[in-house]
Amino acid sequence: AATRFDGQLIMAPAKAFGQFARGVRATRGLAQADTMVACCRCAGLPPTRHFSEGARAFGHHSCHSLRFRQPRSLPPSLCVGGREGSLASAYCRLSGSDRSASARCYAAKGFLKELQELKESGEREDRRLKKQKQKGKKAKAKAKAFGSRQKASTAIEYESPLEVLLYPHPKLRAANLTVTDFDDNLASFATELFEVMYETDGIGLAAPQVGVNVRVMVYNPTGEASEKDQEVVLVNPRYVNKSKGQTLFEEGCLSFPEIMGDVKRPKSIVVEAQDLKGDTFRLELEGLEARIFQHEYDHLEGVLFHDRMHPNVLKEVTAKLQALEGKFESENPGVAYQGV
Image 1 (cartoon, rainbow, N blue to C red):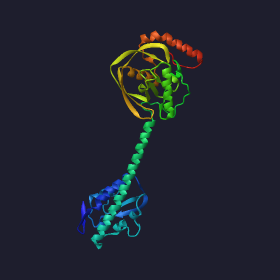
Image 2: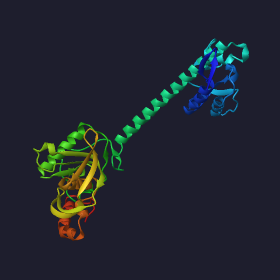
Image 3: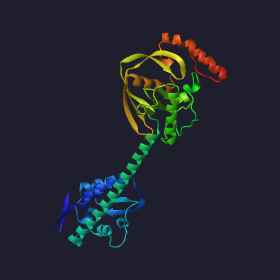
Image 4: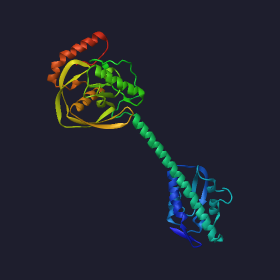
């Protein structure tokens, strides 16, 4: 839609106003204030559907008299009774054929420009709020449980030197909290986990095995402290996929000294976790590494490897499990635990 003033073709203010009215309403920035009246007649324009749409956007139906509440950010020049000589005021005062075409053109252009500026201001504010909301969601997502519904941990608390807890210590069955603080304390804790793992001739170790109930695990398939490039730290790990094919393999556990048993697990897996900086990474594991991950991940879920043994295999190691239970009872009288 366009109209001609003194031979100049310009966008009809009616169309722009209709679009602008809907935009202002969307910003929810309307407030109780003076109203402004704008008429098609002010610019010598015929009623159009754009003015009608603009009116309906503010809950009115007259295409000749549009009344809308003034947004808090509305420039003074757009207010009725605004500063003398403002473009908007001039636009609103213009009427009929007693005003020259050039004046109507000037006022219409000015009014359209001010409306456009206000619309752009609202759009900028919307983008700012959207960006701020997205930033908040991203921070919240990083802090919340990664792959777990367990409550988040504010900080890791532990005492050095770390020691491996033996079955049936209750902390081996306790819920493990997700890590939200990726700081130097977390890095130091991971280093000590490796140290304890190497000292006890292990190839994997989970935080609850040393009495720290957080979702952290480490492993090194070589079991050699000199092979630093093989060390893997997984914070807040989770499964992405498991293969349908399974394999049976004899496992042991640092929390179950001298107890071995066959356990069936998926042959290959895909997992995600966070590193010591909080960045997410993905691993595709198979063979020994897949089995180490699944064994240690079970610890983070409060599941112990004898829970997954076939009944016939479990029967073979029951006596040794009960011996560990008896030892724990004598050293920790009155402490409840989950036995075999």
